[in-house]
Image 1: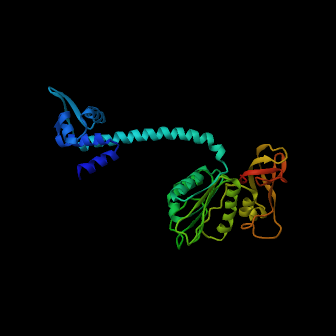
Image 2: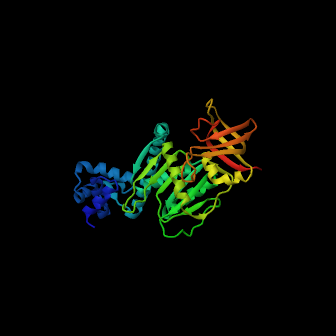
Image 3: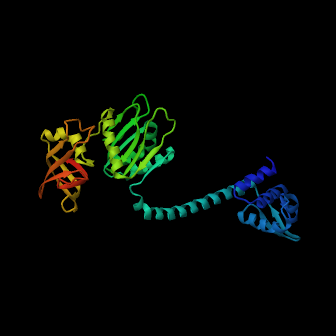
Length: 352
């Protein structure tokens, strides 16, 4: 490698042109006076002393007093450059941490203003970051439809969501046959060879990408608009119902976003007379007072303009009737106006 190439590479490491040329000259000389370094490096006489001071501060050279002035020596480059590397890494790390703290504070201040946003991203790494964030923020209901290769990257986050009590449904795709993988207990898993990528966490966070066979790359829609996230949740009912079961995980307790999904899973159980207990978080539709209500499910209503499969088609009305200590109340979805309670979440358990 030529001195010119070395100079260029040292500049890439953060040294100036004069610093690089002087340092290479010092290594060539082994031991030299400033005037010798001027002759070897070509650095101007008026700049050499400042450059020597800079290199000494970096630890790349050593300067000793000599009867005729300063004497410069260059220790082993491998040793001093390794030390420089660690100092630079520590310095960059501290700077990144400081910038990160300032930006995070700014982000927290503006986070409320960005709720409901919709954007598109093209990089899978960016989409994967949003997928992880969606999974980590889920509190009640999480639907994940991803290729097997992506699931293997987010398996820990999915397991953590199951462990903290989130109702998770996992749909895998991207291979000809169901993958030979182990899954957390209680996690319902289904499979189909091809499926769109979508992740929907509660009503808060949605990611979607179409699995178009003629496209080599994907664009990912990212949204925190509640209506769009719920559209994703509804879309999954159709895909989920028509996919092969890998692992059955429908067991209690479970958290639901609305009565419809409760009835999809437990309508037959309720019809059979088994007592189920629902704890509903939401607000009263008459006075808009938020609260929590607990009671036994004693009745329900599930209907639409035509008799159909409500796994794949949303009903006009889906409501539960609970027998609570305050008397019977009716519970509808989060936008309910006719029922007594508009539900944000419904925790379902069996009678103890």
